[in-house]
Image 1 (tube, one colour):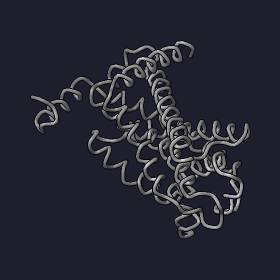
Image 2 (cartoon, one colour):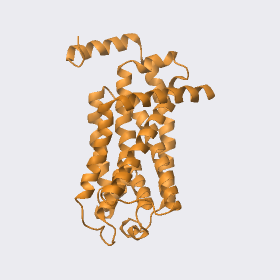
Image 3 (cartoon, helix red, strand yellow):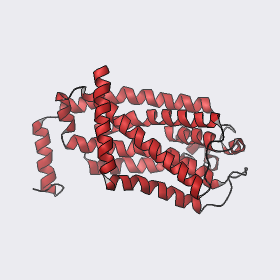
Length: 283
């Protein structure tokens, strides 16, 4: 187990260095922050029934969505791409195998997600008078909600990446439901403005609870009036995110192992020939 963690952390460190040197990918993360700031800058209303600026609710929602996006969109795409390139096949001869691979991906996603959210909150506070935690308790809430939120989505993203087809189809299959959750989860406007059946659907998924937990850390207590229960429901936030984290871990490891077992040199060569014939790879 110690060797697995060591191998995973070493691999994660290497992937982080590659990420920092990848200007295109870094630009993509910065673009998300810029979009959130531009949206917040053009919103001037208050949250209905409160004196909390709507821009603050939107920024808290965007922070939650960035965590969700990195785990549920970026990670599955990365896994599918690496599978197509033969990474899962090579894991059979790699120290630590699948567990070390998961540790590395978790480290990469955590650093990227926390860094992106920290940049968003800092830039928002400086440029558009965005919200920040008001005291130690709020900072603690921000920490544990972010941690549990990532634990809820990263293993789930790994499980999804293990079963999705090629990278182009993966993006199409993931993006639509993810954007739907963005709309119905109370990240861009108060969830109480949605029909009750829609609220109930949103409550099944982690994004709604991630956004609610981050609002509790970033917004004043008076903003609770815009919540479905009239409170932050932090115990329920913790319960739902923990349940998703357990489900994700139970699914991710066996699905990745199954995907690795199914890989072979002949399968990899066949995929490369098909990609070359379709023009996706040079012949």
